[in-house]
Amino acid sequence: MKRFASAVSIAVLCLAAPLSAGAQSPQGTWTKVGETTTVRTDTGIATVNGKIYLMGGQANGLTASTMAQEFDPSTKKWRDLAPLPHGGSHVGVGAMNGKIYVSGGFLANVHKDPIDQLAEYDIATNTWRSLPPMPRPLGATGLAAIGGKIHVIGGRGPDAKTVTLHQVFDLATGKWSTAAPLPLARDHLGVTVLDGKIYVIGGRTDLTVDNTGQTDVYDPATDKWQTVAAMPTKRSSSGIAVYKNQILFFGGECKNAQTRATFNEMEGYDPKANRWTQYTSHPTGLHAGGLAAVGDTAYFFSGNGGCGGDNPSNAIWAFKLP
Image (cartoon, rainbow, N blue to C red; front, side, top):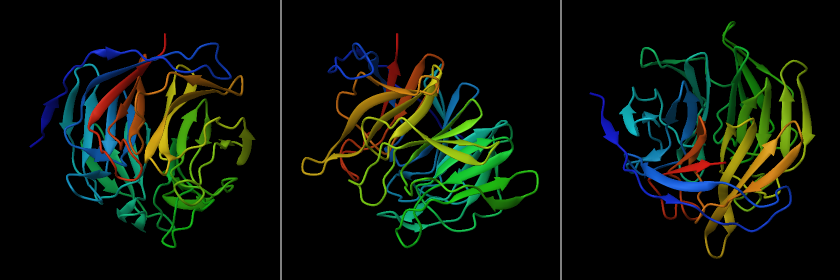
């Protein structure tokens, strides 16, 4: 039986932030608009037809949850969906043609026991099917669904090493192939699609503090990568979303290892200008949550308020630009 929950509306919080390069004055407002049905971190996230889908992660004490949920921003209601075929945290998620794809993931903490799953969720029928597994098990990958193909990028293998692997599954042929490798090996990276190209932003090359701001763009038509303007704030385990013709990148781990503080920065990349802009920072900072944009609002779900698993949150935050 599907379970529904209604999120609670909370007052708007408008925040100031210091001036930065790329903007005359940081813009944007943060609003706490509700709560998730459970404390949930390290999920994958996708947006389809105005609704937001959260897949897998760590929830209800499970390190590798099979939970799948749909959130409707217009009603603030949740709907439980058919569970994933295989549980996992740090899964890669992307959407295309009314279907959602989930790749890889970890079965245990910390970043251990990666799996090779590739699964497809059909929104219309609320059903899953398992696709041919990835050539090797990986967790904390990025996933981009574009042109009838599923691109699984980067990640961390069973040896705990980050990789440059760029594996492509062709839905038409049912086969995997290898594309041009990611220019820099990393996991906990942000991956999204905009105007026919794949953007890979941030991530970590090894440990939690080994963050990068590198921004790479892949063109599926030429099988080539281009490294563009670097994100000003180096971070990983962040939220990424396309919003108002730019790419937002929010939060991350780990800003200060001594105080266990997370990143609270919100930065946006404009591909046409090849320029980053700093927006209003979040009041506390979060990582290991999901960012998704619907209409004029970007939503961030759950995550941790401190490094690692410190201070898990069930809050839903909304960010808006004028």
